[in-house]
Image (tube, helix red, strand yellow):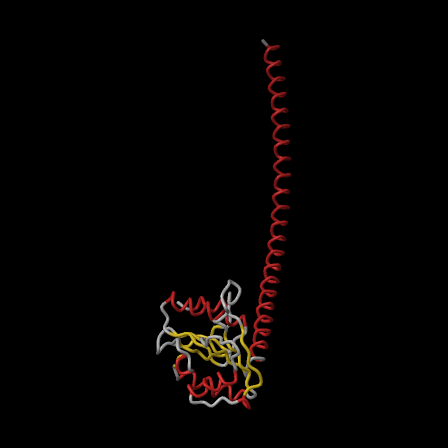
Length: 234
């Protein structure tokens, strides 16, 4: 009997040692995992700081690109501050643009003579003359000698509606005299007009090379300088 009890004690102590060893192993593993988790947390914190810094740098660079783009567009538009674009006058073989523009001046009640014009020429609109057509929808770009003359013509054009019949053409279609916009602004104006229709705003216009929009006659005027401004048209 005594021998059996002694054997049981030895077996029990052996099992206790094994359990203790197992617990020590588990505890070591747990401590290692804690260290690894702490290391991962530190790495994640460092990565978050790095990502935040990168995000700030990206935002800064985006703002710089946007500012540079606006500056280039403004310079491009400034170079056109004596220009107008005339749309809707059909191309005639052997035409004399000075005579045509003189008739436009008569229709606007703002005389346009050769002495007022630095240069005038036709420019194709999109797809004009490239798809088998005769390019009869080409616009006329006019560069005046003085900005004040350009502004006087535009002021009359805003108040006067006329058609090609008043210029001596048989077919009647409206003629438009507008500011000559830089390509970037022309694209932005098209997007503004589309947004105006979508959101049921009443007005979108250009003055002095700048694009504006207004929801109603009494609402505040929105200056549209970039695509992001269109989100304000709600």
